[in-house]
Image (cartoon, rainbow, N blue to C red; front, side, top):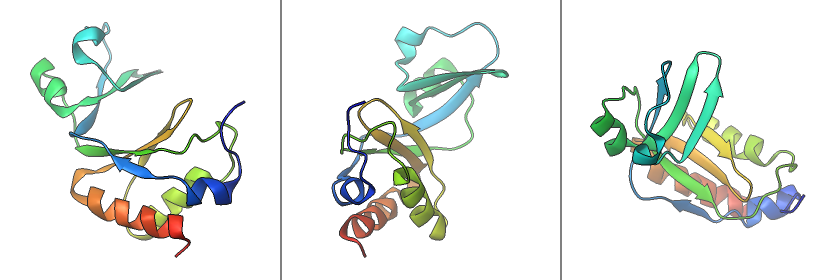
Length: 133
């Protein structure tokens, strides 16, 4: 497995990047929608239906309901899928400040979906955590 596994290195070199746009989580229990048109950044099959993570404007254009709006923060460090404690340290820091986070781990990076209104605060907290403060 490639990617960094050492917690101290991961935290020190996470380099969070706030992505453009707003994102929502939607679900559909029926046949899958036209995924090519929606361009989801993520999807997950659950027993209750298909969960889609996509740009807010695409969900609205497709008439898909959502309940919250998020911003996506990408942690630029190439983290291993076998790394231990990285997301726990991050989510713990954000939770201590009352910020919810929906993390998604992909092959190269971890992505955090945080409430849109608290995205800037999230970046500040991650910068402090990266500096060890």
